[in-house]
Image (tube, rainbow, N blue to C red; front, side):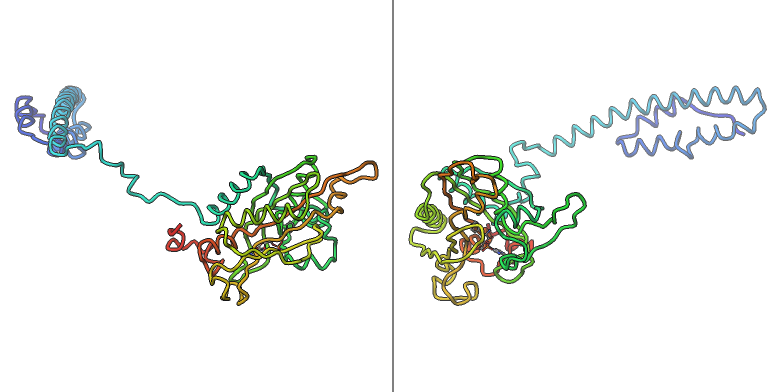
Length: 348
Ligand code: FA5
């Protein structure tokens, strides 16, 4: 093996010629990189006799430490110079908007917008908000609402059944928000005035039906509540959401939990009542079900007992959110809300 002929002067002279950090890395590799002069000599040490190996090893290690120290010092100098030059060229404008602002922010779904608007109208009328579970027992979704087993009214709401591993009662995905009436009445005594917005599920799909949709339930129980109060509240609400000129029609109907019951239609806004595919040519579109609370429901929640007087009456209603959103935004197919098509959603 050749003895090391490392000259500090030569090394320092060569180092002074290096003008960039990239060049410096190459220069460093030529001495102490994997195949550098010093590294190669270190690899060959094993071939030397003991005495010579010790002497060579010492001077090689000293050379390596010297090289390393001077390269590090030069690296700092060169890096600072390069940064200075870069900053002098690239002026930083701290008034420019951050990069994240160039990305489009998300928006609210049209159904959420309508739910929020409607909730605010009812809150303004003194209603509070209640919630209930989306997976319900048969008892709360049907029985307590006077929809008994084998009653034909169960066919009106095509039900999704959920697997039940914990309770003995059948579990369903709630088909309407009406079970929140029962849960709240069991917890609170009248007077009551609340709405319960939320998701509901039915085995249903066409241009005005989706398997998952949203309802807002409403319940008011107090002394002297009559059908006139129900009409006044719903008409005020519809005229607020649409316009004071919107035609509203109360059509006699049947719900086991209200008596008398009514469905409420509004003049189809998409065709101005002339008849279109959404209103199926009738000029009217059904937006909600409503009625006076059936005394059987008051019995089921323990309000009416054999023991005392119950001088309260109440009304209830259940609104279809998507139907309202369709009419409000002029959308002729309810399924568009749930296709996640950005071209559609970006419009709101
Ligand atoms: C009910 O769900 C009753 N719980 C409403 C009610 C509450 C009546 C309180 C009396 C007292 P109905 O099945 O008609 O009723 O549904 C109410 C509204 O939900 C309908 O008027 C309609 O606007 C909407 N709706 C019903 N099914 C669907 C569906 N598959 N997709 C979208 N909207 C629907």
